[in-house]
Length: 130
Image (cartoon, rainbow, N blue to C red; front, side, top):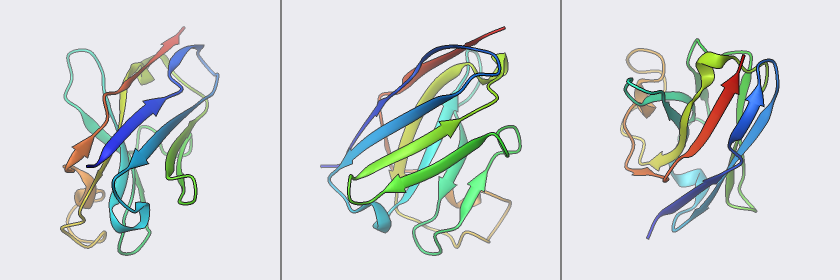
């Protein structure tokens, strides 16, 4: 059974940093696309950072590019999201996600390969105060 458990969310001032972690079980990290999504109040959930399983390439949504970094530690079976220069508009529930890669990472629009995945964690709240 695939399980994803996020931690590390909290309240931070604008300009600060946070690192989210996602403990995984039930699959091998390198076999699945792994990603971070977020959902702000009143908005749809969106993929913000992904690592493809086939090519090990990364995707970042423009709004987080240069500020957020996705990484994984296969030995610890853990996915990370390092967030810096946080802004109030980064306030959201953050989810880690995993799934089978159905498309090459260079097919379709950027990030197409990770827009919908099979498994999601329960989410962790990140609140950025101004």
